[in-house]
Image 1 (cartoon, rainbow over the protein chains, first blue to last red):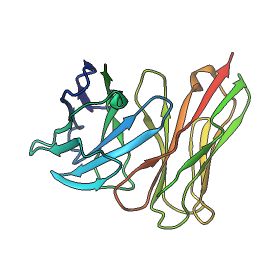
Image 2: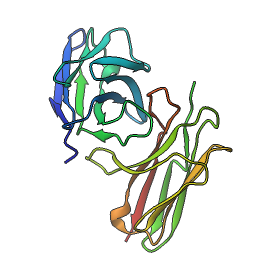
Image 3: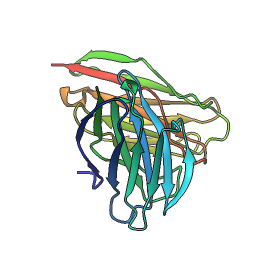
Image 4: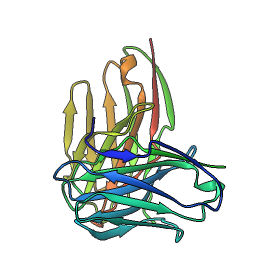
Length: 114
Length: 111
């Protein structure tokens, strides 16, 4: 158990809908990272927050947004969903703001868009 | 665009064989190189973090080396066991807070 909690574990929805994925980092970790893993692809970096502030952005679509709340949990919002958004979404946390800290991953949220 | 490449993509070895994989990363603006192990139906777990050129890390039968000047890292597994079967990921950071992952090497150890 990494200490990172992601909900929901599985989600099935239809095209055009909006979903919210939630992540609670390990106790004491201030950094939260979001990754997308599509079929046969590696972990694609989406976005990172540190202590409530956005620190880095990757290939995150404009239809997607995220935030980190004062209690350090984070939410990834995916809207106007398309079939291609079906993927495993991972959240990871780290104690450091970036670079040398070990990432602790949650178990992922599997999104299926029909 | 930062590119992290891993080879081979997949590998089947017999129990007891030793094996190694390669991670190639940009040699400029290096900050750290990470190795993760990802078992099926689980989430990635950190193996090593390396920051200095020439770093060598070891954990049991698994070890890793780092060459930041030429931009590569090797992961070695000595005497592979079936429980070593997993995908091994490397991730590069350049101080921009992004951890850029390679696509991984999928290892299957046959008993």
